[in-house]
Image (cartoon, rainbow, N blue to C red; front, side):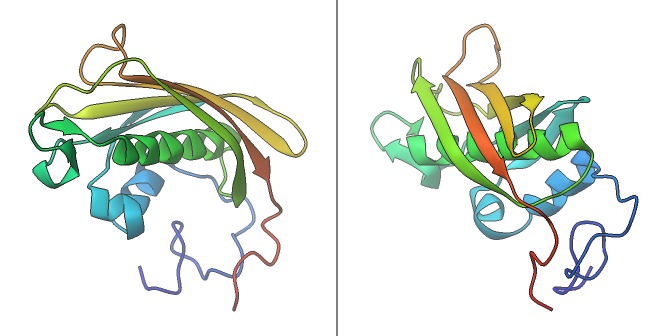
Length: 163
């Protein structure tokens, strides 16, 4: 895939007619580039309207050295990426979108040395908005690190990339 191609391997100017977003392939592409690539996020699993991304523990992502607990920023990024990808997963296509609101409530600190998994679901899509929710946990989904809820504004894909 060249720098002028998108997740589907086609030129960035438009998506081919009938394009279907593959959550596993898309997540693997996104997690190798940019901020998600730097943080080391990984694809974990997906369903019809949800996706899971994982953030393996790394010493350089620790917030307070004495505790070994991951900083909040990488967990926020993990939840933001997972919620965003859940919209594309539910819609079955990639379209640009804008985060209108993303609330994250921390329940507890992540366990030092453990991978954090974000499971995000797109539970409602309207004409111009998608509604999402999710959790981050470090091995037990019934004992979450954080909860999230958000709204994305859906944007037309026409002309979204410069030729």
